[in-house]
Image 1 (tube, rainbow, N blue to C red):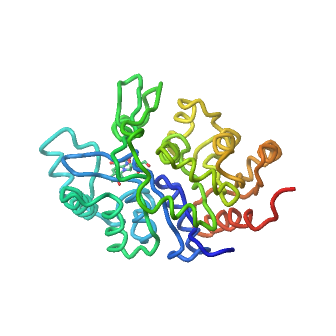
Image 2: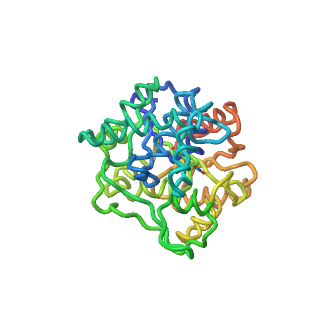
Length: 316
Ligand code: FO1
Protein backbone atom coordinates (compact mmCIF):
# COMPACT_ATOMS: atom_id res chain seq x y z
CA UNK A 1 0.00 0.00 0.00
CA UNK A 2 1.29 3.44 -0.88
CA UNK A 3 1.47 6.10 1.82
CA UNK A 4 -1.44 8.49 2.16
CA UNK A 5 -4.34 8.40 4.61
CA UNK A 6 -7.26 6.01 4.87
CA UNK A 7 -10.30 8.27 4.42
CA UNK A 8 -13.65 7.20 5.87
CA UNK A 9 -17.04 8.73 5.01
CA UNK A 10 -18.95 8.46 8.26
CA UNK A 11 -22.37 9.06 9.76
CA UNK A 12 -23.08 8.31 13.41
CA UNK A 13 -23.11 5.17 15.51
CA UNK A 14 -22.82 2.60 12.68
CA UNK A 15 -19.75 4.38 11.37
CA UNK A 16 -18.32 4.72 14.89
CA UNK A 17 -18.64 0.98 15.50
CA UNK A 18 -16.85 0.34 12.20
CA UNK A 19 -14.09 2.87 13.04
CA UNK A 20 -13.52 1.11 16.37
CA UNK A 21 -12.47 -1.96 14.38
CA UNK A 22 -10.64 -0.06 11.66
CA UNK A 23 -8.23 1.58 14.11
CA UNK A 24 -7.06 -1.92 15.03
CA UNK A 25 -5.95 -2.45 11.45
CA UNK A 26 -4.89 1.06 10.42
CA UNK A 27 -2.84 3.36 12.67
CA UNK A 28 -5.11 6.06 14.13
CA UNK A 29 -2.72 8.72 12.76
CA UNK A 30 -3.44 7.48 9.23
CA UNK A 31 -7.23 7.92 9.49
CA UNK A 32 -9.14 10.91 8.13
CA UNK A 33 -12.85 10.77 8.94
CA UNK A 34 -15.23 12.94 6.87
CA UNK A 35 -18.32 13.35 9.06
CA UNK A 36 -21.92 14.17 8.23
CA UNK A 37 -23.14 17.54 9.51
CA UNK A 38 -26.70 17.32 8.16
CA UNK A 39 -27.89 16.15 11.61
CA UNK A 40 -26.42 19.28 13.25
CA UNK A 41 -28.86 21.48 15.13
CA UNK A 42 -29.05 24.72 17.08
CA UNK A 43 -30.61 23.66 20.36
CA UNK A 44 -31.23 26.06 23.31
CA UNK A 45 -28.70 28.38 21.67
CA UNK A 46 -26.02 25.64 21.45
CA UNK A 47 -24.62 24.17 18.22
CA UNK A 48 -24.95 20.39 18.41
CA UNK A 49 -23.02 18.20 15.94
CA UNK A 50 -24.19 14.64 16.74
CA UNK A 51 -22.29 12.65 14.12
CA UNK A 52 -19.02 14.54 14.68
CA UNK A 53 -19.37 14.07 18.45
CA UNK A 54 -20.29 10.39 18.13
CA UNK A 55 -17.20 9.67 15.99
CA UNK A 56 -15.01 11.71 18.37
CA UNK A 57 -16.32 10.02 21.52
CA UNK A 58 -16.09 6.49 20.06
CA UNK A 59 -12.55 7.00 18.75
CA UNK A 60 -11.64 8.50 22.15
CA UNK A 61 -13.05 5.40 23.85
CA UNK A 62 -15.36 7.50 26.06
CA UNK A 63 -18.67 6.98 24.25
CA UNK A 64 -21.71 5.50 25.93
CA UNK A 65 -21.58 2.44 23.67
CA UNK A 66 -24.90 1.00 24.76
CA UNK A 67 -26.84 4.19 24.05
CA UNK A 68 -24.60 4.97 21.06
CA UNK A 69 -24.41 8.72 21.59
CA UNK A 70 -23.10 10.90 24.43
CA UNK A 71 -20.51 10.09 27.05
CA UNK A 72 -20.27 6.93 29.14
CA UNK A 73 -21.27 7.57 32.74
CA UNK A 74 -22.59 11.04 32.02
CA UNK A 75 -25.17 12.60 34.35
CA UNK A 76 -28.23 14.62 33.32
CA UNK A 77 -28.64 17.16 36.13
CA UNK A 78 -28.71 20.17 33.84
CA UNK A 79 -31.08 18.28 31.54
CA UNK A 80 -33.52 17.69 34.43
CA UNK A 81 -33.34 21.36 35.41
CA UNK A 82 -34.01 22.38 31.80
CA UNK A 83 -37.02 20.05 31.67
CA UNK A 84 -38.39 21.98 34.70
CA UNK A 85 -38.14 25.19 32.69
CA UNK A 86 -39.49 24.14 29.31
CA UNK A 87 -41.42 21.37 27.60
CA UNK A 88 -38.95 21.74 24.70
CA UNK A 89 -36.53 19.37 26.46
CA UNK A 90 -36.90 16.27 24.24
CA UNK A 91 -33.23 16.32 23.16
CA UNK A 92 -31.18 15.01 26.09
CA UNK A 93 -27.84 16.66 26.85
CA UNK A 94 -25.62 15.05 29.46
CA UNK A 95 -23.69 17.33 31.81
CA UNK A 96 -20.24 16.44 30.43
CA UNK A 97 -21.59 16.34 26.88
CA UNK A 98 -22.86 19.86 27.54
CA UNK A 99 -19.26 21.03 27.98
CA UNK A 100 -18.54 19.93 24.40
CA UNK A 101 -21.48 21.94 23.08
CA UNK A 102 -20.63 24.98 25.21
CA UNK A 103 -17.01 24.85 24.00
CA UNK A 104 -17.95 24.45 20.34
CA UNK A 105 -20.63 27.16 20.45
CA UNK A 106 -18.23 29.56 22.15
CA UNK A 107 -15.53 28.97 19.54
CA UNK A 108 -17.97 29.25 16.61
CA UNK A 109 -19.30 32.52 18.06
CA UNK A 110 -15.72 33.86 17.86
CA UNK A 111 -15.68 33.04 14.16
CA UNK A 112 -13.59 29.87 14.41
CA UNK A 113 -14.67 27.55 11.56
CA UNK A 114 -16.30 24.20 12.35
CA UNK A 115 -13.39 22.14 10.97
CA UNK A 116 -11.00 23.89 13.37
CA UNK A 117 -13.30 23.49 16.39
CA UNK A 118 -13.77 19.82 15.50
CA UNK A 119 -9.99 19.38 15.37
CA UNK A 120 -9.61 21.13 18.76
CA UNK A 121 -12.21 18.85 20.35
CA UNK A 122 -10.64 15.72 18.83
CA UNK A 123 -7.25 16.80 20.14
CA UNK A 124 -8.62 17.51 23.64
CA UNK A 125 -10.26 14.07 23.70
CA UNK A 126 -6.93 12.50 22.71
CA UNK A 127 -8.14 11.35 19.30
CA UNK A 128 -5.15 10.97 16.93
CA UNK A 129 -7.26 10.54 13.79
CA UNK A 130 -8.35 13.62 11.86
CA UNK A 131 -12.09 14.27 12.01
CA UNK A 132 -13.35 16.67 9.35
CA UNK A 133 -16.89 17.95 8.94
CA UNK A 134 -18.14 17.47 5.37
CA UNK A 135 -18.37 21.30 5.21
CA UNK A 136 -17.91 24.36 7.41
CA UNK A 137 -21.05 25.79 5.81
CA UNK A 138 -24.49 25.28 7.43
CA UNK A 139 -26.42 22.32 5.99
CA UNK A 140 -29.58 20.87 7.55
CA UNK A 141 -31.24 17.55 6.78
CA UNK A 142 -34.97 18.19 6.77
CA UNK A 143 -37.90 15.89 6.07
CA UNK A 144 -41.35 16.57 4.68
CA UNK A 145 -43.50 14.17 6.64
CA UNK A 146 -47.12 13.44 7.50
CA UNK A 147 -46.39 15.31 10.78
CA UNK A 148 -45.03 18.37 8.94
CA UNK A 149 -41.68 19.71 7.79
CA UNK A 150 -39.20 18.50 10.40
CA UNK A 151 -35.51 18.94 11.19
CA UNK A 152 -33.89 15.52 11.21
CA UNK A 153 -33.60 15.57 15.03
CA UNK A 154 -37.28 16.47 15.42
CA UNK A 155 -38.09 13.51 13.19
CA UNK A 156 -35.60 11.07 14.71
CA UNK A 157 -35.71 12.00 18.40
CA UNK A 158 -38.89 13.96 19.13
CA UNK A 159 -41.16 11.97 16.78
CA UNK A 160 -39.23 8.70 17.24
CA UNK A 161 -39.07 8.39 13.40
CA UNK A 162 -42.77 7.45 13.36
CA UNK A 163 -44.13 9.95 10.80
CA UNK A 164 -44.37 8.80 7.17
CA UNK A 165 -41.59 10.51 5.19
CA UNK A 166 -42.52 11.94 1.81
CA UNK A 167 -39.32 13.77 0.94
CA UNK A 168 -35.88 14.46 2.37
CA UNK A 169 -34.13 17.72 1.50
CA UNK A 170 -31.12 19.70 2.59
CA UNK A 171 -31.05 23.43 3.30
CA UNK A 172 -27.80 25.20 2.42
CA UNK A 173 -26.39 22.25 0.46
CA UNK A 174 -26.02 24.13 -2.85
CA UNK A 175 -23.82 26.78 -1.22
CA UNK A 176 -21.83 24.31 0.88
CA UNK A 177 -18.15 23.77 0.06
CA UNK A 178 -16.10 20.74 1.10
CA UNK A 179 -14.28 21.53 4.36
CA UNK A 180 -10.59 22.48 4.01
CA UNK A 181 -8.46 19.34 3.86
CA UNK A 182 -11.06 17.07 2.25
CA UNK A 183 -9.85 17.44 -1.34
CA UNK A 184 -6.22 16.84 -0.35
CA UNK A 185 -7.05 13.85 1.87
CA UNK A 186 -9.18 12.13 -0.77
CA UNK A 187 -6.64 12.72 -3.56
CA UNK A 188 -3.80 11.35 -1.43
CA UNK A 189 -5.84 8.49 0.08
CA UNK A 190 -4.42 4.98 -0.13
CA UNK A 191 -8.00 3.84 0.52
CA UNK A 192 -11.41 5.47 0.88
CA UNK A 193 -14.02 3.58 2.91
CA UNK A 194 -17.75 4.33 2.92
CA UNK A 195 -18.81 3.31 6.44
CA UNK A 196 -21.97 1.28 7.10
CA UNK A 197 -24.07 4.38 7.75
CA UNK A 198 -27.47 5.30 6.45
CA UNK A 199 -26.94 5.99 2.72
CA UNK A 200 -29.89 8.39 2.57
CA UNK A 201 -29.29 10.69 5.53
CA UNK A 202 -25.73 10.07 6.70
CA UNK A 203 -23.62 9.32 3.62
CA UNK A 204 -26.06 11.08 1.28
CA UNK A 205 -25.44 14.59 2.63
CA UNK A 206 -21.65 14.15 2.35
CA UNK A 207 -22.04 13.11 -1.30
CA UNK A 208 -24.35 16.07 -1.96
CA UNK A 209 -21.81 18.69 -0.94
CA UNK A 210 -20.94 20.15 -4.38
CA UNK A 211 -17.58 18.81 -5.55
CA UNK A 212 -17.38 15.82 -3.19
CA UNK A 213 -18.72 13.24 -5.66
CA UNK A 214 -16.20 14.40 -8.25
CA UNK A 215 -13.35 14.02 -5.72
CA UNK A 216 -14.50 10.48 -4.95
CA UNK A 217 -15.07 9.26 -8.51
CA UNK A 218 -11.43 10.18 -9.22
CA UNK A 219 -10.32 7.59 -6.63
CA UNK A 220 -13.04 4.98 -7.27
CA UNK A 221 -10.44 2.25 -7.74
CA UNK A 222 -9.30 2.73 -4.14
CA UNK A 223 -12.77 3.00 -2.61
CA UNK A 224 -14.76 0.30 -0.80
CA UNK A 225 -18.29 0.55 0.63
CA UNK A 226 -19.57 -1.49 3.57
CA UNK A 227 -23.26 -2.43 3.42
CA UNK A 228 -25.32 -0.85 6.23
CA UNK A 229 -28.12 -3.33 5.67
CA UNK A 230 -28.42 -6.99 6.51
CA UNK A 231 -31.16 -8.80 4.61
CA UNK A 232 -32.75 -5.47 3.79
CA UNK A 233 -32.86 -4.39 7.42
CA UNK A 234 -30.81 -1.80 9.25
CA UNK A 235 -29.16 -2.81 12.50
CA UNK A 236 -31.25 0.00 14.04
CA UNK A 237 -32.87 3.25 13.02
CA UNK A 238 -34.99 4.39 10.07
CA UNK A 239 -32.53 3.45 7.33
CA UNK A 240 -35.01 1.48 5.22
CA UNK A 241 -37.79 4.05 5.54
CA UNK A 242 -35.45 6.86 4.54
CA UNK A 243 -33.95 4.90 1.65
CA UNK A 244 -37.48 4.34 0.37
CA UNK A 245 -38.18 8.07 0.70
CA UNK A 246 -35.12 8.65 -1.46
CA UNK A 247 -36.28 6.04 -4.01
CA UNK A 248 -33.35 3.77 -3.17
CA UNK A 249 -34.10 0.01 -3.19
CA UNK A 250 -33.90 -0.72 0.57
CA UNK A 251 -31.42 -3.59 0.42
CA UNK A 252 -27.70 -4.16 -0.22
CA UNK A 253 -28.33 -4.10 -3.98
CA UNK A 254 -29.85 -0.63 -3.65
CA UNK A 255 -26.84 0.56 -1.70
CA UNK A 256 -24.50 -0.94 -4.32
CA UNK A 257 -26.42 0.85 -7.07
CA UNK A 258 -26.17 4.14 -5.20
CA UNK A 259 -22.38 3.88 -4.82
CA UNK A 260 -21.54 2.21 -8.13
CA UNK A 261 -19.70 5.22 -9.62
CA UNK A 262 -17.91 5.87 -6.33
CA UNK A 263 -16.62 2.50 -5.14
CA UNK A 264 -14.85 -0.49 -6.68
CA UNK A 265 -15.30 -2.75 -3.67
CA UNK A 266 -18.35 -3.76 -1.64
CA UNK A 267 -18.48 -5.66 1.66
CA UNK A 268 -21.74 -7.57 1.82
CA UNK A 269 -23.22 -9.28 4.85
CA UNK A 270 -23.09 -13.08 4.80
CA UNK A 271 -26.89 -13.20 5.00
CA UNK A 272 -27.02 -11.40 1.63
CA UNK A 273 -24.47 -13.63 -0.14
CA UNK A 274 -27.08 -14.42 -2.81
CA UNK A 275 -26.82 -10.78 -3.97
CA UNK A 276 -23.06 -11.04 -4.54
CA UNK A 277 -23.23 -12.02 -8.27
CA UNK A 278 -25.58 -9.14 -9.08
CA UNK A 279 -23.35 -6.68 -7.20
CA UNK A 280 -20.22 -8.06 -8.86
CA UNK A 281 -21.98 -7.63 -12.22
CA UNK A 282 -22.14 -3.87 -11.48
CA UNK A 283 -18.33 -3.82 -11.54
CA UNK A 284 -17.61 -4.28 -7.84
CA UNK A 285 -15.13 -6.62 -6.21
CA UNK A 286 -17.29 -8.19 -3.50
CA UNK A 287 -16.35 -9.58 -0.08
CA UNK A 288 -18.94 -11.47 1.94
CA UNK A 289 -18.57 -11.20 5.73
CA UNK A 290 -20.77 -10.92 8.83
CA UNK A 291 -21.17 -7.14 9.01
CA UNK A 292 -22.89 -6.94 12.39
CA UNK A 293 -20.43 -4.73 14.28
CA UNK A 294 -21.41 -5.70 17.81
CA UNK A 295 -17.88 -6.16 19.00
CA UNK A 296 -14.46 -4.86 18.12
CA UNK A 297 -13.35 -8.17 16.64
CA UNK A 298 -16.31 -8.23 14.21
CA UNK A 299 -15.68 -4.62 13.21
CA UNK A 300 -11.99 -5.39 12.73
CA UNK A 301 -12.90 -8.33 10.43
CA UNK A 302 -15.08 -6.08 8.29
CA UNK A 303 -12.30 -3.49 8.09
CA UNK A 304 -9.78 -6.18 7.07
CA UNK A 305 -12.18 -7.49 4.42
CA UNK A 306 -12.69 -3.99 3.01
CA UNK A 307 -8.96 -3.21 2.79
CA UNK A 308 -8.15 -6.67 1.39
CA UNK A 309 -10.47 -5.99 -1.54
CA UNK A 310 -8.06 -3.22 -2.55
CA UNK A 311 -5.12 -5.57 -2.41
CA UNK A 312 -6.67 -7.97 -4.88
CA UNK A 313 -5.63 -7.51 -8.51
CA UNK A 314 -8.26 -5.46 -10.28
CA UNK A 315 -11.14 -7.64 -11.35
CA UNK A 316 -10.44 -9.22 -14.72
N1 FO1 B 1 -30.68 10.51 20.26
C1 FO1 B 1 -31.86 10.24 20.89
O1 FO1 B 1 -32.55 9.29 20.47
N2 FO1 B 1 -32.29 10.97 21.94
C2 FO1 B 1 -31.61 12.02 22.43
O2 FO1 B 1 -32.04 12.68 23.37
C3 FO1 B 1 -30.34 12.33 21.82
C4 FO1 B 1 -29.52 13.36 22.28
C5 FO1 B 1 -28.26 13.56 21.68
C6 FO1 B 1 -27.39 14.54 22.17
C7 FO1 B 1 -26.14 14.73 21.59
C8 FO1 B 1 -25.76 13.95 20.51
O3 FO1 B 1 -24.54 14.12 19.95
C9 FO1 B 1 -26.62 12.96 19.99
C10 FO1 B 1 -27.87 12.77 20.58
N3 FO1 B 1 -28.75 11.78 20.10
C11 FO1 B 1 -29.93 11.53 20.73
C12 FO1 B 1 -28.40 10.96 18.95
C13 FO1 B 1 -28.63 11.72 17.65
O4 FO1 B 1 -29.92 12.10 17.45
C14 FO1 B 1 -28.12 10.76 16.55
O5 FO1 B 1 -26.84 10.40 16.91
C15 FO1 B 1 -27.89 11.28 15.17
O6 FO1 B 1 -28.22 12.53 14.92
C16 FO1 B 1 -28.34 10.21 14.21
O7 FO1 B 1 -27.20 9.52 13.83
